[in-house]
Length: 420
View: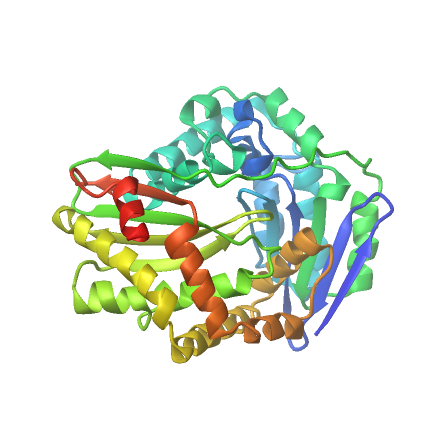
C-alpha cells in the first residue's frame, strides 16, 4: 500500500492510498470547519451547513445528488465534529470520478434554497430534541461544556435550538466564505484509487478556488467544572473527564494505552472491579479522546441512583491504585488491543481515508504505519503509571451526573478523595 500526497498551487491538499485487491474506494473532502471554528452566535451552523449540502446545487437537485451515487450502488454521507466537517462516499472503483464530482458539487455549489432551509431546520430541531431525550448522549455534551467552559470547543455541535431557529441563508453563505477555502480542505481517498487521476480531477474541480486566510484557533483551556441534574430516570448516568494529551503530544500513546487498561474492554480494571466484582453497573468504559491542542480522558457508567456514590468512590480508588500497581501484563494487553483495533480498522477503505485526512490535518503528512506502531511499542509500564498518576492526582477534572443523583458526590468530594 502506497500513500501519495500532492498540493495544488492554491493550497488544496490531496492524499491517497491504493489498497491492492479491492474493487471499491472511499473518497471524501475533510474541511477544517467544525464546531470549534464557530463564533458564539454561529454555534451549530457547521452542522446545519453539512445538512444543507445535500439539499441541492446549481446543477443537481437533492434527489439527483442521492440518485447519482445510489444509481451506481454507492453510499454518500457527511458528519460534523468539533474540528472538521467531512463529506464522503463509498463507490466501486469505476465510479470514483463520479463520486468526487458529486462531492465537489455539494461542497462548492450548494444553493441553500430557502424552502429546503426551513425543512432541514425542522429536521435538526428534531435531532436536538432526540439528543436531549437520550441521557447517555446528552451527558457527553454537558461534560464537554463543563470541561471547556465558555469556549467554542466546549459547545454542542448541534447548537442550541434558539440559534438553529434563527440561521438564515446569508449566515450559511458567510460561514462558507469564512472557512471553505482550498487551504482548509483535504481530499482523501483509499482503496481502488489512482492517485494521478484523482489529482487531475481535483485540479479541474478545485484548482480555480481562491485561497482564504483562516484565523488561528483559539487555544483550548481545560477549565473543569460540574453539572448535576436530578431527574426521575431509571438509571443515573455518570461521566468524568480529566485533561489529557492532545494528538500532537508525545505521551498520547501512553494515554490511549492507559485508557484501554483502565476501561477499554471486559478485562479492563473498571469493568472487572466495578461491574464484575461489585455489580454496580451494566456499562462502564474509559477512553482517551484528543484534539489538536488538548485532550479528554473520559469515564462513563450507568448505575442506580443509590449506587452512584459507591461507583464514583470505587472509580477514584481504581484511578489511584493504577499509579502503583499497573502491571506489565495489563499494559501489554491494552497495547495489543490498541494495535489490533487500529490494524483491523484499516482494512476498511473508509477508515483508512479518514485516518489519512486526519493525519494530514494534524501533521501535514502521513507518518508510516510502522512508525506509529513503533511509538505504541515504545510505551513502557512506567510511562503508563506516570499517566495514571497524572490523571488520578493532578489533572483538572469535570463531572456530569444525570438522573436520580440527589445526594451524589460532587467534584469537591471527588477532589478530596483524589488527594487523600
